[in-house]
Image (cartoon, rainbow, N blue to C red):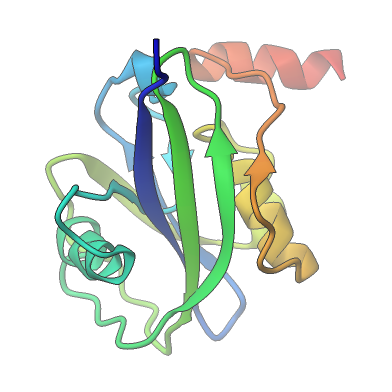
Length: 165
């Protein structure tokens, strides 16, 4: 049996203070290790008929309403092994002069600008830790990077894992 694969795009949007825009997920999709309340960079599934670049523009419209992101560049590719399917994410970066926060969408809320090092201590969607850490360390064009971090199914479980380290 062939393993299903999902293509996704993500955007690390950085303001002039070096902060990254993150958001809170509001949907539960356990088969993708996505739980309500997790923090993430904006991520979106790529439709079968669209290019990666078109998917990034759609991501901006759907998850970052009101923000303009005219240019972005490829950072790297990441693999998230999920129970089913596997998720391959192409991550892009963009700079903005704005400190505005997008309007709340249907699937995400609580957008905030956060210093990259602080993001690494939050309850994150799988592979987002590696995406942000690679950006912070200047690592680019990694093909592909696999997440080996244990997925916490709640914010309480995440906090418990942090105290065991």
